[in-house]
Image 1 (tube, one colour):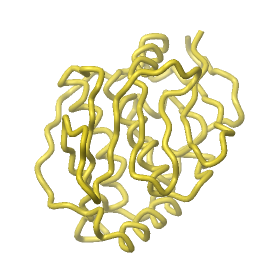
Image 2 (cartoon, helix red, strand yellow; image 1 turned 180 degrees about the vertical axis):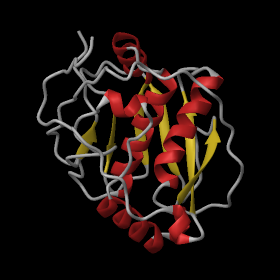
Image 3 (tube, one colour; image 1 turned 180 degrees about the horizontal axis):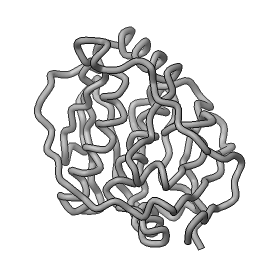
Length: 220
């Protein structure tokens, strides 16, 4: 399946690494994220997903603080619901300016099996992408990186998807204005996982549903 691609609106051939790094910022900004797991995701997969999403945000100076099995989060907390829905060709969705994103775990499982991508890694990037829509302006898909309207599975397997420098600056600016989203830091669990074959890549079409941002996919 070398070179496999699913046709879509654009092609992510390269990754832009954010110029704003946690090391450059000195102190990371901590953000609380409540996870409501309605699908019973196995613990190692969830831990890996949280670790991968955390890597994306740590790169721009943001530390995600995960609260698992929190289906009724308090005020000032971002929320990610892990669910399954009869929605065609999408891995998740979120709307800019709100606090809740949804990841469709049944689609993540199907996509990871079809293209031999580690499920926890894919889950992490979907969570990072959808959280990004909560923190960025509407229609915030980019030509490269984790917010691309396509997902490059080769880069995902190598765990190299990141925000662009512009996106990193926008996220930090929004968090600075909304300090109520910050939370105290706590250690994150992590686990090892095998990587998917590096020669597999797929692309996903961008949503056109107004301000709602999805990460769609066509899976045979």
